[in-house]
Length: 79
Image (cartoon, rainbow, N blue to C red; front, side, top):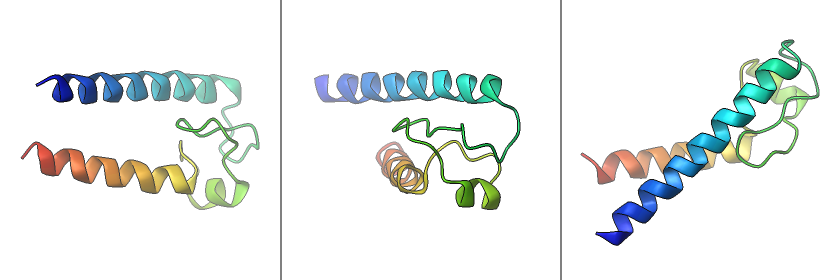
């Protein structure tokens, strides 16, 4: 049971950190193609090519893929 609580706490921490970075991104510069946008997971700048393709991206491509994989496993574990 402890494992479930640890995973839930880790998920909550990631989501909180992501929300803080989204807030910073939103209020730092509202233009979608600015170079100042950072990934909500790793904190690195999101490449301008990614922002051109996905103007509202909040994650770099590597972290976006990892997030999708986590969500697939999370949904699989909870269905």
